[in-house]
Image 1: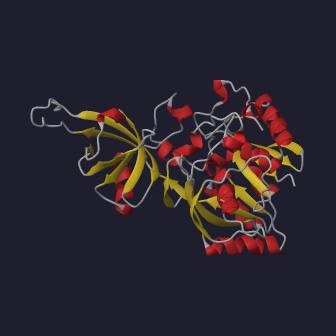
Image 2: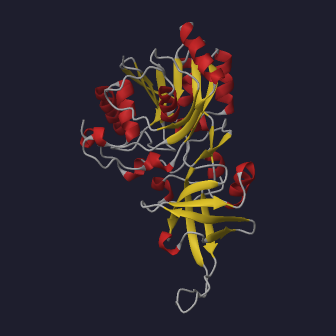
Length: 358
């Protein structure tokens, strides 16, 4: 298929700059077994059945945007390479490499060299250890692990998606709004946005309904916003994200399937990770590592029966995933309905619930 097969026109005012309040009051387009209906996220407690299993991504968004200063460089020998003042550096962390090391997008990247130190506040700093050909800078921080997580909470800002950040500043309330209520594992630089719709009260109602819940972890990288640049989508190379499916979660998924319950993937991240963990028999197995799985039309999803997700960008790999899961024609028809019915799009927008087409 071609990239233009996944294009559509979207007016800027349809991009949600704020989430629905309360969270579960967002609209939800249901595409269930081919029939469309306009509902609300809070209706999930009526739509899902006892014995169904929600699979949620518990990754926690880190405050990945940092403002720092690279101190002045002294003159070296007879070469006039010194600088009288420091340089302001804007850092957007995009991928964690280990407990103390991140890859980042930097402005102005040309003002950084290997071994330069960037100071963020009084106690947090990072050393440039690599300049990559694609312009990405690799930093090692002066603290690691949970200490680094806490330092980022103190010194960083939430990394709102570019289509929001370009139109308004980050606000204090984004630290709550752009985080799921069940977020635990620090590591994402973009939210698993389908999960933003869940409130504690909705989770309580689902539990009372007999809908169970289990967790996976997929740390969402900035690659989720990268455009597809190849006209033939088969030629697109996916970004890699790190994820983990525990033995307990794999067992719970298998038990649910065995008794006839449905697996409900909350978001494309949960679905991508489960599919990365599927064995030859279609069973989700324990998994830990990076995945660059590309789910596009022609791919047969085996792990999930339903998918809850937001409305995605034109020409995006996430839209291709929805087309693979629900069928291309159903995807196009549903998006036409959403566009005609005033649904709100992207990370802070409305949701959609899909049954698998096969």
